[in-house]
Amino acid sequence: MGRVPGAGLALGAAAAGGAVAVARTGYGPETDGTDAGAAVEFHGPHQAGIATPVQDRLHFAAFDVTTEDRAEFVELLKEWTAAARRMTAGRSVGEGAYGGPGEAPPDDTGEALGLKPSRLTLTVGFGPSLFGKFGLAGLRPEALVDLPKFAGDNLDRDRSGGDLCVQACADDPQVAVHAIRNLARIGFGRVVVRWSQLGFGKTSSTTPDAQTPRNLFGFKDGTRNISGTEKDRPEKFVWVGEKDGPAWMAGGSYLVARRIRMHIETWDRTSLQEQEDIFGRDKGEGAPAGKANGTLLKGVFNFQPDPTVLQVTVWLLYLVPTLALFLAPVGFASGKGKVKVPDEQGSRPSKAPQSPRA
Image (cartoon, rainbow, N blue to C red; front, side, top):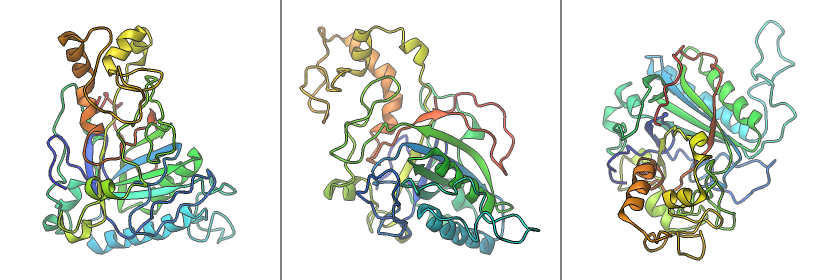
Protein backbone atom coordinates (compact mmCIF):
# COMPACT_ATOMS: atom_id res chain seq x y z
CA MET A 1 0.00 0.00 0.00
CA GLY A 2 1.28 3.41 -0.85
CA ARG A 3 1.99 6.12 1.64
CA VAL A 4 -1.05 8.19 2.52
CA PRO A 5 -0.71 11.84 3.51
CA GLY A 6 -1.72 12.23 7.10
CA ALA A 7 -1.42 8.58 7.99
CA GLY A 8 1.40 6.13 8.46
CA LEU A 9 -0.95 3.24 8.01
CA ALA A 10 -0.02 -0.16 9.34
CA LEU A 11 -2.46 -2.55 10.98
CA GLY A 12 -1.52 -4.13 14.23
CA ALA A 13 0.25 -1.88 16.61
CA ALA A 14 -0.15 1.81 17.13
CA ALA A 15 -0.98 4.49 19.54
CA ALA A 16 -3.53 7.05 20.45
CA GLY A 17 -2.35 9.05 17.55
CA GLY A 18 -0.02 6.56 15.97
CA ALA A 19 0.37 4.12 13.14
CA VAL A 20 1.45 0.51 13.13
CA ALA A 21 2.13 -2.45 10.90
CA VAL A 22 0.44 -5.74 11.49
CA ALA A 23 2.30 -8.68 10.11
CA ARG A 24 0.56 -11.63 8.58
CA THR A 25 2.33 -14.09 10.92
CA GLY A 26 -0.17 -16.78 10.05
CA TYR A 27 -2.64 -15.82 12.75
CA GLY A 28 -6.42 -15.90 12.74
CA PRO A 29 -8.50 -16.38 9.61
CA GLU A 30 -11.63 -14.32 9.31
CA THR A 31 -14.53 -16.27 10.70
CA ASP A 32 -18.21 -15.84 10.01
CA GLY A 33 -19.07 -17.03 13.53
CA THR A 34 -21.07 -14.46 15.42
CA ASP A 35 -21.96 -16.53 18.50
CA ALA A 36 -21.03 -14.25 21.39
CA GLY A 37 -19.55 -17.14 23.37
CA ALA A 38 -17.66 -18.83 20.53
CA ALA A 39 -13.92 -19.02 19.93
CA VAL A 40 -12.25 -17.37 16.94
CA GLU A 41 -9.44 -19.44 15.44
CA PHE A 42 -6.06 -17.89 16.22
CA HIS A 43 -4.06 -19.33 13.31
CA GLY A 44 -4.88 -18.64 9.68
CA PRO A 45 -3.96 -16.66 6.55
CA HIS A 46 -4.42 -13.27 8.30
CA GLN A 47 -4.48 -12.05 11.87
CA ALA A 48 -7.90 -12.22 13.47
CA GLY A 49 -9.49 -8.98 14.65
CA ILE A 50 -9.26 -7.20 11.29
CA ALA A 51 -11.92 -8.72 9.05
CA THR A 52 -13.53 -10.64 11.90
CA PRO A 53 -17.19 -9.78 12.62
CA VAL A 54 -17.05 -6.89 15.06
CA GLN A 55 -17.21 -7.68 18.78
CA ASP A 56 -18.79 -5.49 21.45
CA ARG A 57 -15.77 -4.63 23.62
CA LEU A 58 -12.18 -3.50 23.16
CA HIS A 59 -9.03 -3.16 25.23
CA PHE A 60 -6.24 -1.58 23.19
CA ALA A 61 -2.73 -1.28 24.61
CA ALA A 62 0.51 0.19 23.31
CA PHE A 63 3.82 -1.03 24.71
CA ASP A 64 7.38 0.29 24.74
CA VAL A 65 10.13 -2.30 24.48
CA THR A 66 12.56 -1.85 27.37
CA THR A 67 14.93 -4.75 26.80
CA GLU A 68 17.94 -4.17 24.59
CA ASP A 69 18.51 -7.89 24.10
CA ARG A 70 17.16 -9.07 20.74
CA ALA A 71 16.94 -12.68 21.92
CA GLU A 72 14.80 -11.61 24.90
CA PHE A 73 12.48 -9.71 22.58
CA VAL A 74 12.10 -12.70 20.24
CA GLU A 75 11.36 -14.93 23.22
CA LEU A 76 8.70 -12.48 24.40
CA LEU A 77 6.91 -12.66 21.06
CA LYS A 78 6.95 -16.46 21.26
CA GLU A 79 5.53 -16.38 24.79
CA TRP A 80 2.83 -13.93 23.71
CA THR A 81 1.94 -16.21 20.80
CA ALA A 82 1.54 -19.22 23.08
CA ALA A 83 -0.54 -17.25 25.59
CA ALA A 84 -2.73 -15.66 22.89
CA ARG A 85 -3.40 -19.07 21.33
CA ARG A 86 -4.69 -20.38 24.67
CA MET A 87 -6.70 -17.30 25.68
CA THR A 88 -8.52 -17.01 22.34
CA ALA A 89 -9.55 -20.65 22.79
CA GLY A 90 -10.95 -19.88 26.23
CA ARG A 91 -8.13 -21.54 28.12
CA SER A 92 -5.90 -20.27 30.92
CA VAL A 93 -2.34 -19.09 30.38
CA GLY A 94 0.37 -21.63 31.12
CA GLU A 95 -0.48 -23.93 34.03
CA GLY A 96 -3.48 -21.83 35.00
CA ALA A 97 -4.58 -19.68 37.93
CA TYR A 98 -4.42 -22.32 40.66
CA GLY A 99 -3.03 -25.77 41.42
CA GLY A 100 0.62 -24.83 40.97
CA PRO A 101 3.35 -24.33 43.55
CA GLY A 102 2.12 -22.30 46.49
CA GLU A 103 5.41 -20.44 46.70
CA ALA A 104 5.15 -18.91 43.21
CA PRO A 105 2.63 -16.63 41.50
CA PRO A 106 0.23 -18.55 39.24
CA ASP A 107 0.70 -18.38 35.47
CA ASP A 108 -2.77 -16.88 34.93
CA THR A 109 -4.40 -14.04 36.85
CA GLY A 110 -7.69 -15.94 36.99
CA GLU A 111 -10.41 -13.36 36.33
CA ALA A 112 -11.53 -15.13 33.12
CA LEU A 113 -11.99 -18.53 34.81
CA GLY A 114 -15.40 -19.95 33.93
CA LEU A 115 -16.02 -17.40 31.17
CA LYS A 116 -16.57 -18.35 27.53
CA PRO A 117 -14.00 -17.35 24.84
CA SER A 118 -16.41 -14.54 23.87
CA ARG A 119 -14.94 -14.34 20.34
CA LEU A 120 -11.71 -12.94 21.76
CA THR A 121 -9.22 -11.84 19.11
CA LEU A 122 -5.70 -10.58 19.78
CA THR A 123 -4.16 -8.54 16.97
CA VAL A 124 -0.49 -7.56 17.36
CA GLY A 125 1.26 -4.79 15.47
CA PHE A 126 4.59 -3.02 15.25
CA GLY A 127 4.94 0.77 15.53
CA PRO A 128 7.46 2.89 13.58
CA SER A 129 9.66 3.32 16.66
CA LEU A 130 10.28 -0.43 16.95
CA PHE A 131 12.29 -0.36 13.74
CA GLY A 132 14.85 1.90 15.38
CA LYS A 133 15.80 -1.02 17.65
CA PHE A 134 17.46 -4.41 17.19
CA GLY A 135 18.85 -3.48 13.77
CA LEU A 136 15.39 -3.57 12.15
CA ALA A 137 15.61 -0.25 10.26
CA GLY A 138 15.90 -1.93 6.88
CA LEU A 139 12.67 -3.88 7.46
CA ARG A 140 10.39 -0.93 8.15
CA PRO A 141 7.62 -0.60 5.53
CA GLU A 142 7.81 2.70 3.65
CA ALA A 143 4.18 3.49 4.48
CA LEU A 144 4.73 3.05 8.22
CA VAL A 145 5.41 6.57 9.47
CA ASP A 146 4.23 8.71 12.36
CA LEU A 147 1.09 10.73 11.76
CA PRO A 148 1.48 14.50 11.37
CA LYS A 149 -0.48 16.79 13.62
CA PHE A 150 -3.94 17.45 12.23
CA ALA A 151 -6.03 20.60 12.64
CA GLY A 152 -7.69 20.55 16.04
CA ASP A 153 -5.28 18.03 17.55
CA ASN A 154 -4.13 18.46 21.13
CA LEU A 155 -1.56 15.71 21.40
CA ASP A 156 -0.27 14.16 24.60
CA ARG A 157 3.05 12.43 23.98
CA ASP A 158 2.41 10.09 26.91
CA ARG A 159 -0.68 8.75 25.13
CA SER A 160 0.76 8.56 21.63
CA GLY A 161 3.15 6.21 19.90
CA GLY A 162 4.46 2.86 21.06
CA ASP A 163 6.79 0.13 19.82
CA LEU A 164 4.12 -2.58 19.92
CA CYS A 165 0.37 -2.62 20.15
CA VAL A 166 -2.15 -5.30 21.03
CA GLN A 167 -5.81 -4.97 20.14
CA ALA A 168 -7.99 -7.26 22.25
CA CYS A 169 -11.61 -7.49 21.09
CA ALA A 170 -14.27 -9.64 22.74
CA ASP A 171 -17.97 -9.73 23.55
CA ASP A 172 -17.17 -9.81 27.28
CA PRO A 173 -15.14 -6.85 28.63
CA GLN A 174 -13.56 -8.99 31.35
CA VAL A 175 -12.20 -11.40 28.73
CA ALA A 176 -10.57 -8.53 26.80
CA VAL A 177 -9.08 -6.94 29.94
CA HIS A 178 -7.81 -10.33 31.13
CA ALA A 179 -5.98 -10.84 27.84
CA ILE A 180 -4.13 -7.51 27.94
CA ARG A 181 -3.39 -7.88 31.66
CA ASN A 182 -1.76 -11.25 31.16
CA LEU A 183 0.27 -10.20 28.12
CA ALA A 184 1.55 -7.20 30.08
CA ARG A 185 2.38 -9.52 32.99
CA ILE A 186 4.28 -11.91 30.73
CA GLY A 187 6.24 -8.99 29.33
CA PHE A 188 7.32 -7.61 32.70
CA GLY A 189 10.97 -6.52 32.52
CA ARG A 190 10.97 -6.57 28.70
CA VAL A 191 8.09 -4.29 27.77
CA VAL A 192 6.10 -1.64 29.60
CA VAL A 193 2.58 -0.39 28.91
CA ARG A 194 2.82 3.07 27.37
CA TRP A 195 -0.93 3.73 27.26
CA SER A 196 -4.15 1.78 26.94
CA GLN A 197 -7.79 2.40 26.13
CA LEU A 198 -11.03 0.58 26.84
CA GLY A 199 -13.80 0.77 24.27
CA PHE A 200 -17.39 -0.33 23.87
CA GLY A 201 -20.09 -0.40 21.23
CA LYS A 202 -20.08 -1.47 17.61
CA THR A 203 -19.40 1.64 15.55
CA SER A 204 -18.32 -0.31 12.51
CA SER A 205 -19.57 -3.32 10.62
CA THR A 206 -17.53 -5.84 8.66
CA THR A 207 -20.45 -8.09 7.74
CA PRO A 208 -22.91 -7.09 4.98
CA ASP A 209 -25.97 -8.55 6.71
CA ALA A 210 -25.37 -6.64 9.94
CA GLN A 211 -27.21 -3.40 10.67
CA THR A 212 -24.96 -0.35 10.44
CA PRO A 213 -24.23 0.64 14.07
CA ARG A 214 -24.55 4.15 15.47
CA ASN A 215 -21.92 6.32 17.11
CA LEU A 216 -22.39 8.37 20.27
CA PHE A 217 -23.82 11.25 18.18
CA GLY A 218 -26.66 8.90 17.26
CA PHE A 219 -25.74 8.66 13.57
CA LYS A 220 -24.99 5.49 11.66
CA ASP A 221 -21.24 4.93 11.45
CA GLY A 222 -19.43 2.71 8.97
CA THR A 223 -21.61 2.91 5.86
CA ARG A 224 -18.53 2.92 3.62
CA ASN A 225 -16.87 0.00 5.34
CA ILE A 226 -15.62 -2.87 3.26
CA SER A 227 -17.24 -6.15 4.23
CA GLY A 228 -14.97 -8.83 5.62
CA THR A 229 -16.78 -11.34 3.42
CA GLU A 230 -15.88 -9.54 0.19
CA LYS A 231 -13.12 -11.01 -1.96
CA ASP A 232 -11.76 -8.24 -4.20
CA ARG A 233 -11.78 -5.02 -2.20
CA PRO A 234 -10.06 -6.39 0.94
CA GLU A 235 -7.21 -7.63 -1.27
CA LYS A 236 -6.93 -4.16 -2.81
CA PHE A 237 -7.43 -1.93 0.22
CA VAL A 238 -6.80 -3.99 3.39
CA TRP A 239 -4.25 -6.77 2.92
CA VAL A 240 -0.69 -5.92 1.95
CA GLY A 241 0.37 -7.59 -1.30
CA GLU A 242 3.69 -9.29 -1.95
CA LYS A 243 4.88 -6.30 -4.00
CA ASP A 244 3.63 -3.64 -1.59
CA GLY A 245 6.38 -3.80 1.02
CA PRO A 246 8.82 -6.06 2.83
CA ALA A 247 8.17 -9.77 2.46
CA TRP A 248 7.23 -10.09 6.14
CA MET A 249 4.28 -7.71 5.62
CA ALA A 250 2.62 -9.76 2.85
CA GLY A 251 -0.87 -10.68 4.04
CA GLY A 252 -0.67 -8.16 6.87
CA SER A 253 -2.28 -4.74 7.08
CA TYR A 254 -2.01 -1.27 8.63
CA LEU A 255 -3.77 0.44 11.51
CA VAL A 256 -4.24 4.01 12.65
CA ALA A 257 -5.56 4.45 16.19
CA ARG A 258 -6.96 7.84 17.21
CA ARG A 259 -8.74 9.08 20.32
CA ILE A 260 -11.36 11.56 19.15
CA ARG A 261 -13.05 13.89 21.61
CA MET A 262 -16.83 14.07 21.12
CA HIS A 263 -18.46 17.15 22.67
CA ILE A 264 -21.73 15.38 23.43
CA GLU A 265 -22.92 18.04 25.90
CA THR A 266 -22.93 20.65 23.13
CA TRP A 267 -24.24 18.16 20.59
CA ASP A 268 -27.20 17.24 22.76
CA ARG A 269 -28.36 20.89 22.64
CA THR A 270 -28.04 21.09 18.85
CA SER A 271 -31.21 21.04 16.74
CA LEU A 272 -31.98 17.98 14.64
CA GLN A 273 -31.77 20.02 11.44
CA GLU A 274 -28.29 21.30 12.30
CA GLN A 275 -27.13 17.82 13.29
CA GLU A 276 -28.26 16.44 9.93
CA ASP A 277 -26.70 19.39 8.09
CA ILE A 278 -23.38 18.79 9.84
CA PHE A 279 -23.33 15.09 8.93
CA GLY A 280 -25.04 15.57 5.59
CA ARG A 281 -27.16 12.53 6.45
CA ASP A 282 -30.62 11.59 7.60
CA LYS A 283 -30.44 10.62 11.27
CA GLY A 284 -33.12 7.94 10.97
CA GLU A 285 -31.93 5.98 7.93
CA GLY A 286 -28.33 7.17 7.72
CA ALA A 287 -28.70 8.04 4.05
CA PRO A 288 -27.01 11.06 2.47
CA ALA A 289 -29.64 13.81 2.36
CA GLY A 290 -31.94 13.16 -0.55
CA LYS A 291 -30.95 9.48 -0.87
CA ALA A 292 -33.10 6.45 -0.12
CA ASN A 293 -30.98 4.54 2.38
CA GLY A 294 -27.75 4.54 4.31
CA THR A 295 -26.12 1.45 2.86
CA LEU A 296 -23.72 3.16 0.47
CA LEU A 297 -22.42 6.69 0.08
CA LYS A 298 -23.28 7.58 -3.53
CA GLY A 299 -23.24 10.81 -5.47
CA VAL A 300 -22.87 14.20 -3.85
CA PHE A 301 -24.41 15.49 -0.67
CA ASN A 302 -27.80 17.08 -1.32
CA PHE A 303 -28.39 19.15 1.77
CA GLN A 304 -31.94 19.96 2.90
CA PRO A 305 -33.12 22.65 3.08
CA ASP A 306 -31.45 24.41 0.15
CA PRO A 307 -27.71 23.65 0.16
CA THR A 308 -25.47 26.64 0.72
CA VAL A 309 -21.75 27.21 0.79
CA LEU A 310 -22.10 27.95 4.50
CA GLN A 311 -23.63 24.56 5.24
CA VAL A 312 -20.98 22.73 3.25
CA THR A 313 -18.26 24.72 4.97
CA VAL A 314 -19.69 23.94 8.40
CA TRP A 315 -19.81 20.23 7.55
CA LEU A 316 -16.19 20.25 6.40
CA LEU A 317 -14.99 22.17 9.46
CA TYR A 318 -16.66 19.65 11.75
CA LEU A 319 -15.77 16.43 10.00
CA VAL A 320 -12.66 16.63 7.84
CA PRO A 321 -10.16 15.91 10.65
CA THR A 322 -12.21 12.87 11.63
CA LEU A 323 -12.57 11.67 8.05
CA ALA A 324 -8.79 11.43 7.83
CA LEU A 325 -9.22 8.24 9.82
CA PHE A 326 -12.47 6.87 8.48
CA LEU A 327 -11.62 7.33 4.79
CA ALA A 328 -8.08 5.98 5.08
CA PRO A 329 -7.28 3.05 2.77
CA VAL A 330 -7.24 0.60 5.66
CA GLY A 331 -10.82 -0.10 4.71
CA PHE A 332 -12.20 -1.22 8.06
CA ALA A 333 -13.02 1.67 10.38
CA SER A 334 -13.43 0.02 13.76
CA GLY A 335 -14.45 2.85 16.05
CA LYS A 336 -15.39 2.26 19.67
CA GLY A 337 -16.87 4.44 22.35
CA LYS A 338 -14.16 5.19 24.90
CA VAL A 339 -13.92 4.98 28.66
CA LYS A 340 -10.98 5.90 30.84
CA VAL A 341 -8.64 3.14 31.91
CA PRO A 342 -6.98 2.73 35.31
CA ASP A 343 -3.19 2.55 35.49
CA GLU A 344 -1.84 -0.70 34.10
CA GLN A 345 0.58 -3.01 35.90
CA GLY A 346 4.06 -2.19 34.67
CA SER A 347 2.97 1.10 33.11
CA ARG A 348 4.85 4.34 33.34
CA PRO A 349 3.27 7.07 35.44
CA SER A 350 1.86 9.85 33.32
CA LYS A 351 0.01 13.09 33.73
CA ALA A 352 -3.71 13.34 33.07
CA PRO A 353 -4.54 13.12 29.36
CA GLN A 354 -5.01 16.41 27.54
CA SER A 355 -7.45 15.36 24.83
CA PRO A 356 -4.92 13.52 22.64
CA ARG A 357 -5.93 13.24 19.01
CA ALA A 358 -9.06 15.24 19.75
